[in-house]
Length: 341
Image 1 (cartoon, rainbow, N blue to C red):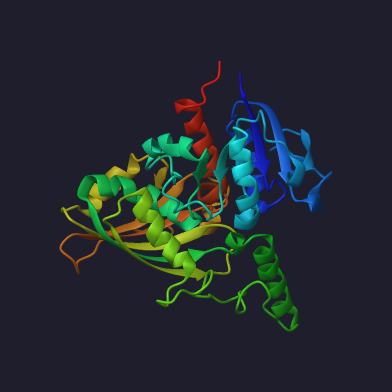
Image 2: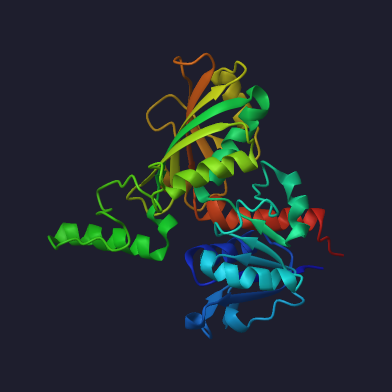
């Protein structure tokens, strides 16, 4: 027996990826529904590469009664309306927006990192999926924290435009084309030109000078991994279509060498260590697209602290940073709480 699964926001980048990954991983499904806003009602979308087409339904009048799991990728405003409605109908919501991430009654889950926290989902019948940059980082940090206890994290992110949705991807494409043919370039989605440029600004600014994206990485890492860890982040948008990268510096309580860290990461769930100290012996964002793994490269010791490491972390943000993590949460939920058959 399988589950009755809803994908909300099925026509967006993340929603489509959720459908792809459900099919790829052969998630046990008896029935699947694709829902979106009224603009997409009646259109058809393919379920992965199965050739099966699903008609998109209007989320405004969709009845969640009798459905087991709903994967939400519809943004905070719509989630605020529809997630409580789905949860009240007995459907467990796995939400990709930021709305519930810091709610103390909603578990924030990365299955390789804090699977036991999922047991708290029954309070609200909602589970939160973390920020894309946080998700890949904590997968890499968890095994190292278990070994030597991380005291402090300094991270600079290099985030692809797909993190800003289809409009962000379109803007990079259109600006790049315009520059090549000599047309003028006007930013619309981003605050400055993104083509052939980098923008040290993602989401809104806070009173302390950080951005909301940077705050998310700090707060979510503490909730998922350890509230005692000190975290500081600088989040940068870069002209890459898909794949987030991170330069991470770590300070540890206990001694850990680069060789020990490499050995640990090599065997860690969700991590793929590609770390050859030679030309091309590392992974770049274009190489991670379509893959499930969080790739770690450039592991080396930091001589400026008593016990420190620096490393490079890359992952497909539409996958591990969003859709894949949501499906992995659904798999974990099924194993622990919603067993069928």
